[in-house]
Image (cartoon, rainbow, N blue to C red):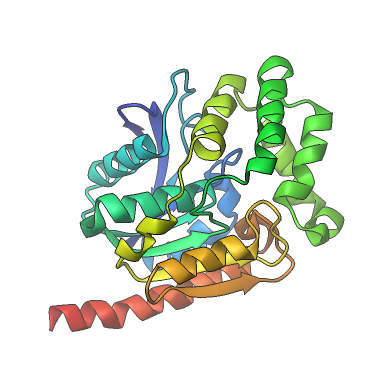
Amino acid sequence: MLVETRRCGRLYVDVRGEGSPIVLWPSVLCSGSMWSSIPEELSRAHRVINIDGPGHGRSSRVREPYTLDDNVDAALAVLDACGVRRAVWCGLSWGAMVGMRLALRAPERVSGLVLIDGNADREVPEKLPAYRAMAMISRLLGPIPPLLDRLEPIYFSPYSLRANRPAVDAFRRGVAAMDRESIRRAVDAVILGREDLRPQLPRIDAPTLVVVGADDVATPRARSEDIVAGIRGARLVQIPRAGHLSAWEQPDAVREAIEGFLATLAPQSARRMA
């Protein structure tokens, strides 16, 4: 289905399964296919709402600037279109940033958070010139091979680069096919334009699982530890042999972490109803 949003265009949403809802939002430069086998496995017990981010995958191209707060508006539009009052939000990188902001603005819509390879801080200043240069190259020339070569070690672990080339090559093909302007808008919103959210994290009261790839260089473990320190009761799980796209690189391990977390939510819901 396609969901119309105010600033983020039409978002493609794949809905499958029945049960308590869980929403998936992927990383920048990835579509909902990034989750590999996870949606299919989770849909055996849950209603899985898998979103392609603005300008990504089967969502419409984006021509106007938007912000992470606009992404929250889009997330609420998807929940409303699906008739979902509350859901577990599961986001990787970009999706984690949206999820934290959603939990702060509309806590009544979030029954739990799974924040994978996320970052609550601004981008490291030393990295900003490189990201700006990469965005400019992509806009002018498209995702050319030298640019894709630079992205590989940012997104994938050394293990995946060596032993999981099908995933890496699928990522390269996906980025190469992307609309240039949509890439620019996503980079502006998610990487260059985000603010430091850490002072606000103690306001989040949703049960939270934080997941990080052991070899994530884009958002290293320290960024995940910041989130765990800020959200009361949050728990951290590290995924071996995984970089920034841990759900793509090690889907079984990430799914097991998600399912373990979801199992802890059922008793909490029962206590609230008692």
